[in-house]
Length: 394
Image 1: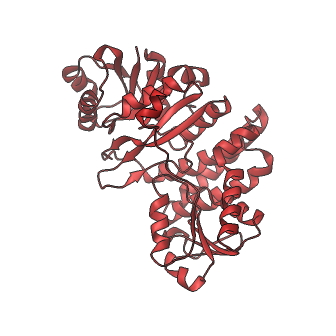
Image 2: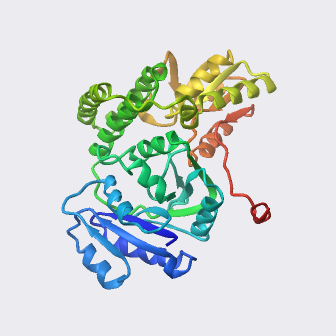
Image 3: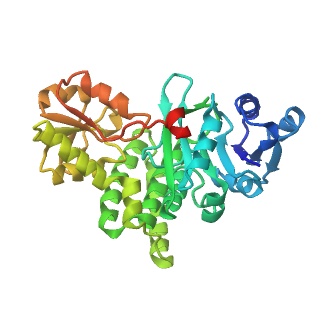
């Protein structure tokens, strides 16, 4: 069998049924070459019964308790396809996303996964803060790689679970590639998720990533950055208690990582994940080409340290850091004032560097800059498209 869809769901029956219909309509492969597996995270809304009635070919795995995102592992183990397409119960592929992804993986054995562009109902997009990371609702992955890496780690109930799995895949010598012409839809069905839990898991799990995977030379920088960033976002939403819980749990996990042994990434994988060298080279070349000496950095992003370090290596003076989110108002970053984008004209830099490398946000941040700045603007992520048919045939 060529492809297995693995869909995770919990108490979103109608969204799940719509997704299964969309999958049926948007999979231009021979019907016997693909299957659908739904992992039901202890739903009590009749999801399993509805699927059994309306989609008899779908295989259901019904769990007795909510295992969060790692519940996908049950589907991975049962999957018979050479490739696995991970979907949420409200996301689905469009157009030729599936045949293009499968064909690309068949031609590129070092590529473990193809990640698509995710479009939302409001016309916006969503993506991972680091472009090398899987998206649980829009990725096609080799089954053999999932088997070898063990799937999602159970401690990542939600938030950052894709980062943990992606780091392990990359450490194994594989590639994760994203393409803007492989398009998925995410309908964003309401699900009653706890905002406090989301903030707690965001901070806690990102700190686990730091302790587990980053080399000692980078650990303190990213620990500092991500604590400040995720804590500010949580407190702005009124979840100071979630921050305290996350910090306590992260400390426990940090001790565990030191005890059992870290899974520190090698230099090549660190570069694949964080792009420190590549970004430094881009900043240096751009600054020299445009005679830039004083810059403003746009966005207090997850990637901020790489941009900050790159500016230092290029001997650039940073005038300020810009961010449009009120959660960061009045804050500083390593002595730099965090200002609104509207302050950009008064700052009068030679150039602006967009720190954000989230594929779904880069261009919107660049547009904010260009509304009031006519000078050189550097973006550190650029879209990638699959090669045209002629190149494939060659």
